[in-house]
Length: 111
Image 1 (cartoon, rainbow, N blue to C red):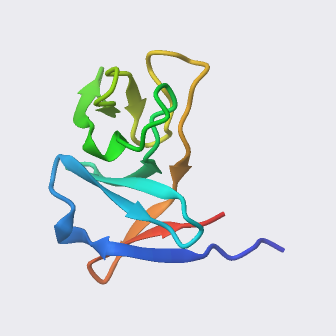
Image 2 (image 1 turned 180 degrees about the vertical axis):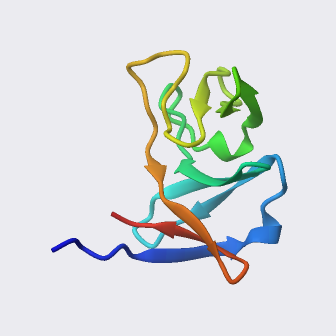
Image 3 (image 1 turned 90 degrees about the vertical axis):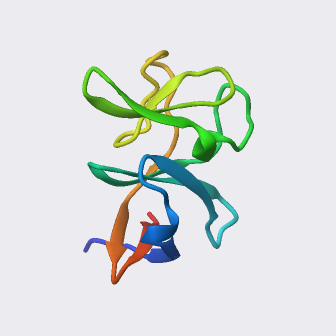
């Protein structure tokens, strides 16, 4: 039997600027970076794996070859918003969280 996903409300969707991100803290202490683009809402770990700094929410949103990405403000590596895969180093990935908007609130899913 599949385990039911636990959703955590993190913020009203209108507090996430279109084309930018915000940081949120999950109950287990993990930081997530929530992004809103014309394609939807995404949630990745907020920690840049190259620097160890919690900064991805302040990254620059764009696309690379039509793939929505965030460029780390530290060293500019790009991470795919829908998977967390680093497009500059195939060996590196950040955690990607399921996310939804329910009644105007961004919710991040747990395992």
